[in-house]
Length: 308
Ligand code: CP
Ligand code: NVA
Image (cartoon, rainbow, N blue to C red; front, side):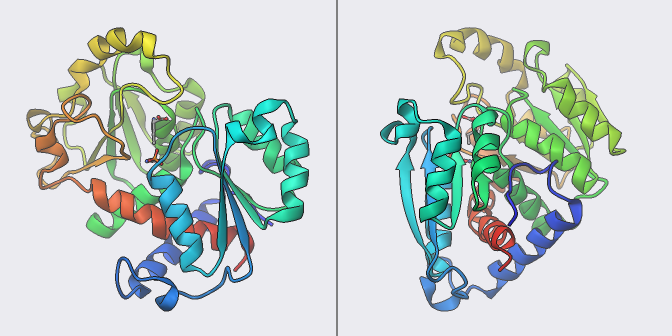
């Protein structure tokens, strides 16, 4: 039994196996919205619990659809409606759920909750986003980059804006897949040093450049995300907007990157804030491919977790 908790805690060979499988699954599908008919029914008889302590569109729908396409069933649970939100320990919740379901996906706040769930569950646990990471998203993003431009190894990825949970998983991926990263954003919103150090220890270049135009020079991929994440206080909204405005991804900024540079955003986006619509809907944007690939990547992650 394997958990999928983070990209940096998953063996690089396993990450590659998952992406190969995701590509196989994607290419084998006959139509985007086809039901179960064109998929292998490897999850037949399996029940998957999808726990959400934060809102979600993509994660919720892509996991739900993915499980169903593989013949399984899902149970979508909101954290606040469970005893989890009313004092029952995570460990007891993990032990109980393990008696009912075959796999658990959880979106939560503190990553300690994810780790405790994984420690005490007898079934695989998948990280569907915590305050510190979002590994399923970045597996889909690496898949997306490679299907458009070939191997990501050795490429230059530039993160613009808030050094948040999605940025952290990109840094994890930099170390595991071997690409260089530049972070450009205000000093108060730098990614945690531990993520930078870990990537560097694996031999990739990670740099910080406060000048966005300079940072994106020769970039193969430019990425951004919302300026205020779900776990951030709305009271800091105005200050964060003022700090982050110089890092907005515009067509002028993208003009500094390589001519064939891609643009990514995990969504949901706040158009005209972290990125302009001209970029989001522009020729280098692959934002909806990223969203689609969540489905394929997560089906491969679930199969890997269950050894199917
Ligand atoms: N990108 C992503 O995880 O989106 P949701 O919050 O809609 O799940
Ligand atoms: N950084 C964002 C990602 C949402 C998918 C958040 O945590 O709200």
